Image (cartoon, rainbow, N blue to C red):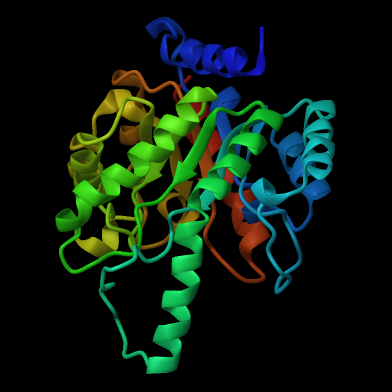
Length: 311
């Protein structure tokens, strides 16, 4: 079986899992390594401490304040070395949290929250134009990482939010559609994350945009990201989603622990199982600073406690 066929078979098996085996348990829990650790080795230790079979990759874990380097951007030999280390540790990679399309869409005006001087505006426009022009090359790097880590799921975004997001949906759909066609040839699926700063910020917006996109584009659902936009994450936001296209779920620490953003995860877990979710629950702690690592441990303990109570 060649690499493309392997990746396609991997996802095909996931989406066709019989209902009886769709139970959410520890085997389907992941964590973004740079949220839960300060080094590559520590991320493996975190997985072993909690008995996790998989992790998710965004940036290489580093000390506070250090420059962030995305895994997908590594040279081939460095990618292969990291992949071997995860495999030797008995860990598979569940999801690639790449930053693709998380910048201004050229010829649109972002919805600004504060004034910007001309020099800063010019710098932003130049930076984002360069990112837009490199989108195909970035995608190819993401596909290479996907193959190396044997993970067919890659996150994308929907450009910096404008005043009327749905007005740019047709243009965004054309751009993502082009990327999706390239990815599909290599057995890779693209997952849109609903994100506060992006045009598909709410679950409802993400569902509307998805209607314009091919079937190899799905959703990385983040329950808390729509909260600042006025959407109630559950049940309202969740119920607006096409359930067969929810392929990964972010779980933020503040939605688990004693914060105002706390969510009813027992109800959400029941709904995911009811609706045939076959992906991973991915911890994205998002509690920053010196307390991030301890918050990650507390959050993972809570995820596993919730799952244990349901067995």
